[in-house]
Image (cartoon, rainbow, N blue to C red; front, side, top):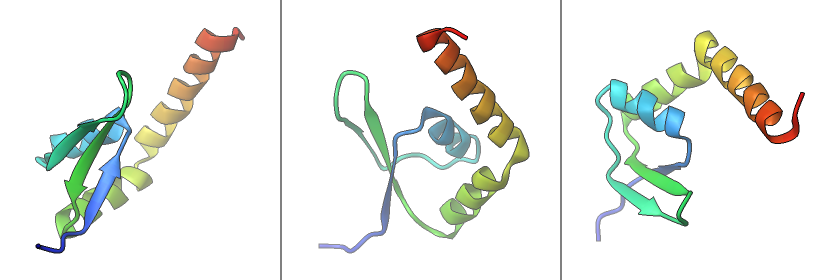
Length: 77
């Protein structure tokens, strides 16, 4: 059996970001009706895009405001 370095992603925003750069999941695993894990094979390009995603200021702000809006929707202001 081939030894591969795999990486699981449950974030739809990260999966969408990776797709923008042409990185497709090797497999999509449904855990529950509402939870999906995207499985990627790690390589140099994947690691570069993941680092870029983690350092992207726009995305940091987006995630922050998205979380705030989710909390407002769940618990009120």
